[in-house]
Length: 88
Image (cartoon, rainbow, N blue to C red; front, side, top):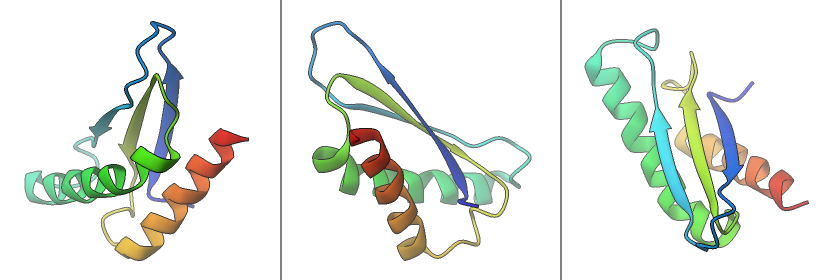
């Protein structure tokens, strides 16, 4: 199970911009752990969204338990797979 949930919602406002958001709840850990997870998510989104994201949609990553221990390369693969499912 991946360390995140990806939510995508088309805006239908005619703007082709890809927007992103990140949320991590207090259940994940202390502020240091939450901020680290958010930094990792932002780096992944900046890397993968420009070529794989849906134009004109909001993409939100929600951190889940166990995501902070997950390897960064593994998270990249999981996010790329999730974005590939969207394009189908």
